[in-house]
Image 1 (spheres, rainbow, N blue to C red):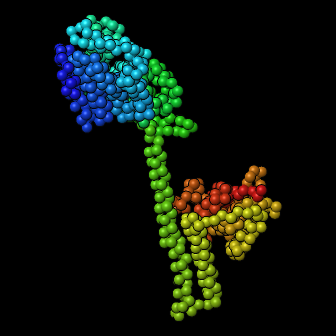
Image 2: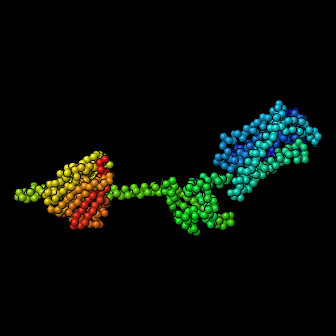
Image 3: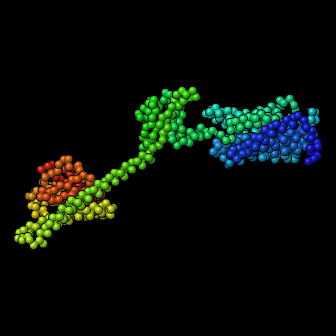
Length: 593
């Protein structure tokens, strides 16, 4: 080591290399700070390589012995091959601070530099990097005369490719930068380009001084450029997120128009909304969106506002909130319009669900009110009548004859029947609301079931002298739940009984519709229903109960049950009526297959 320093003869060129070494050391120190992140770490490695290169070359120029010059040359090539590679990685990292160049690709960039380093250090054994290395003492101080080998040209070509790639990336991204970041990039370009220009002069043999590589000296200018970029424009910490990355990764669709309404830009989300495979640049949106008047009106509106539109995508309607805004240039002059499309489909669907739930709650509330009304009025009336009559029986002050007892017994029977009918309907309704209803469909003969269902009502019809007639062909069959069908028939027949005067008629008939359904009708010659009441019959929130021709109570609950029972079996129910003439209830049930 002492021998090495003893043979050194300092000269101005060797000493001048202290400048790039010191500048590179300052940059290394600044870049290695923790807050500079990955890009700072890579840049610090690049500057460390420049320091090794500059210092080793300074010792080479100061050495007087051939062996020492060759040793310094080998040390230089421990660093030289990696400078351009790491600079390219720095550029990638700055242009895409979030991702940089993926490690899977970055590692391959070091293959050629590593081979270059090995071949340069072991050149004495193969001369593949330098064909010949000799000592030239014709100048002011000894220098190495180098004859380039094949791999040296590979090394140079690779360095050029890396530098040109980095410059193209920097220049390509400069278009959309604001002035602050533009100056930052210009300083970076100078820092990358200056050593390469100086090396090119040396490589093609235009240097006035032979055997002197000026590239390390160029790192003085390069270092100053990077110093400006790092210290003034904060290259390593203040990196503009690439406009393309932000614009193209936005979830909201963005369409940018000029002042005449022609498309000048659109992000992928916007293209997906309108199913554009290719951006329709320079096309007028007034033609493209001719079927969307709300959207074109938004563009014409100078006040700029927000609207909601629906667009058909993949056979489904999607809702979007569209906002417009002016696009201003640096002189604050309006040069276009920016439209943002924010998907509102899920929010709208949730809102619709909330509204649907509100309707369900309103219906449940109406059902609750209906139930309380039934319990407070329709249920109380027959019970009160029953209590009053039984009080008369046990009151010793009343001396009742046999005829009077019969009349009271008939009244009690009427109250009991009304109470029984009401309780049965309430039980059926409660089962239905709890979801405990299991429908068991089977193929049955319609006439047989109707006759069986009406058996318990015949005496009631006979007492009111109402002619009950069943007109159903024996061969007609339906596919339904027997118990539900009986309940439907009893409710509709009882309803006809209540509103038909004495000696009236009730006819139950069925007809094959020549479709998949059988139509059943219950027609009476009763008092009929007012037109304004017909539309309210099957709605629980409406009060439709009214007394029968002889004061029979009616809650309207039976008709609601009939509607649900019919619809649960795949049929439908409706009514036709004329006041003072009569009423006919129709419902359909599926045929047996």
